[in-house]
Image 1 (cartoon, rainbow, N blue to C red):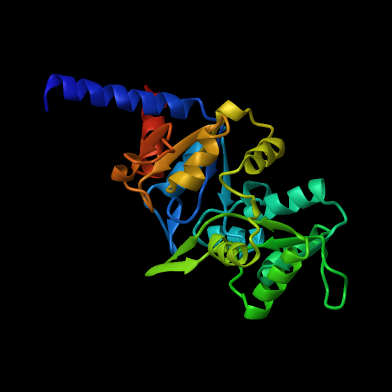
Image 2: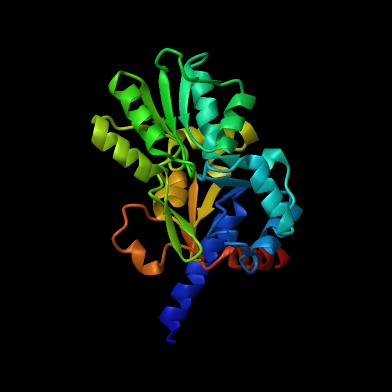
Length: 284
C-alpha cells in the first residue's frame, strides 16, 4: 500500500468516526442489520450495549407490518436484547398515527394480518365490518393472510372512491432461502386493477422521520438511520435532513452504490465495526 492510499484510507476512517460521534439516536433496521433469520449478526448486540452505555439511544424500526411491536420485542429479548415499547416502531405505528391525524374517526378497510388488526383496534381505529357502507379508507399492509376475496374487495372500494394507503413500499421481504412478496407487490396488483396509486408510509418517507423526532425529542441532525437497504433505510435519513448509514451485512453491496440515486453519509461493514470505531475514538 502506497502512502497516498494509506492516507486516504485513514482520512475516510476519520470521517466515518466523526459522523458516529455526532449521533445521539441510532434508528436501526432489523433483518439484515441486527439479525439474519434467527441469528444476531456478529457485533450487533455489543453495538447496542455500547451505545446505550455512552448515553446515546437506540430505536429499532422495521417496515414489516405483519407482526406487532410486542412480537418484535419478544424476538429481540430471545436474542439477548430486551427493549421497552418506546424502543420499537413499525410502519404500522406510522400508519396508525397518520390515520389519527389525517382521517380521524374514518372507517378503514384493512388488508393486514390479525396482529396488525389488533394494533389498529387497540389504537381506536374504526375497522370496516361486513354489511357496513363503503369505508372511507383502504389500508394495505404486508398481509401474509391475503386472500383473493380481500384483494377483490379492496379494489372495489378503491374504484368506488375510498382513499388508498399502504404501510410501506417494500416489494419483497427477505426470508431464509429467498423472498416473500411484500406490501409493495400487493399494492402493484391493486394499482394495476384500479388505476390508483397508494399513498405509501413507513420508510423512506417523511412521516416516519417526523414521528420518530416527535417520539424521541431528538434533533434531526443527531439522528442516523442505519440499515442494509439504500432505497428505504438509508434514503430515510439522507432525503429528510437526518443521516443515512449503510451496513454491508444484508441486501446492499458496495458495487450497488455506483448507480444508486441514494448515497449514504457513511458505509460500515457492520454494527460491530461502528462500535469499534466509536470505542477507539472515545478511548483515545
